[in-house]
Image 1 (cartoon, rainbow, N blue to C red):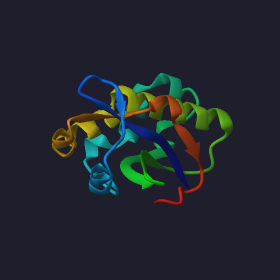
Image 2 (tube, rainbow, N blue to C red; image 1 turned 90 degrees about the vertical axis):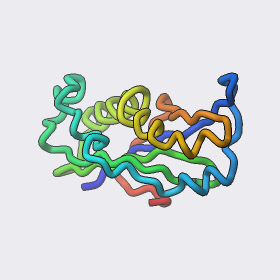
Image 3 (spheres, helix red, strand yellow; image 1 turned 45 degrees about the vertical axis):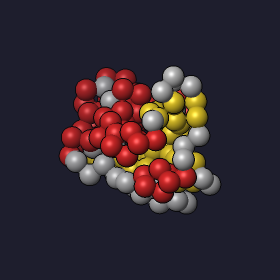
Image 4 (cartoon, one colour; image 1 turned 90 degrees about the horizontal axis):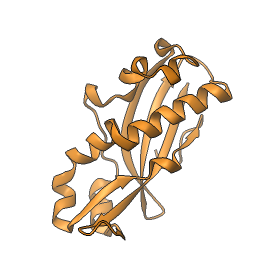
Length: 142
């Protein structure tokens, strides 16, 4: 069973003030995926006791991150594969783990890899991890 998480991506200008993401950059980033093995978020679940007390790490795989445009805004999506449906506490634990990864883990590393696309626009992209949402259904944009 696929489990999805998403969070909005926001832009900061050179003075760290929120700014719009140019449509050209949105087009360039739409559909970009983190295919490297070290950026698969499920690889790090064993290091997260707040998750493993709710979910056996062997039950979750994947954690592929990808960027998608939804109604003109960018979102970071993550797709995990689970051996079965998760209950509410399991889903919340996985959502919290994913938000932490968006904050300073794999999500941040993935955006840093895309720096060459951001630099010409003199802005920095950040994932608004505090607004991470979960769904056991596929987002319409994927």
